[in-house]
Length: 76
Image 1: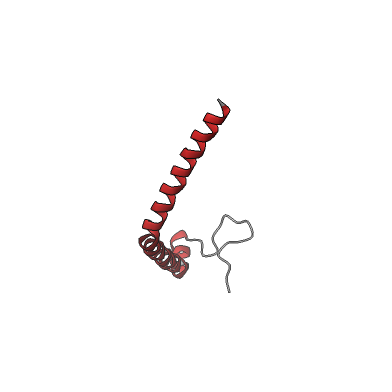
Image 2 (image 1 turned 120 degrees about the horizontal axis):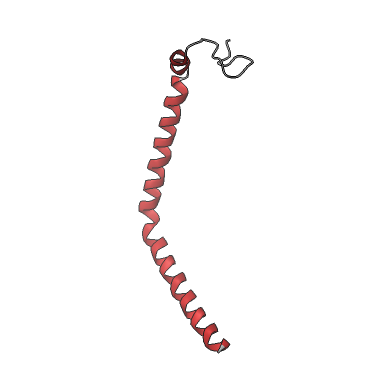
């Protein structure tokens, strides 16, 4: 099995950049497919959890504002 790079690291074993890209086409296509699946899973999870996350954010902000008001009053 041929290595893509020679020992120097900068010269292709096939001596052609385009041939090397053609040889690695399945890796590139696999990465594209995996990223598409991960993106679709992320979108679906955001669809499921957007409303609860929004309410949690609102509650955390309200509690933080109330605590800052109390501690400002107590400090004064």
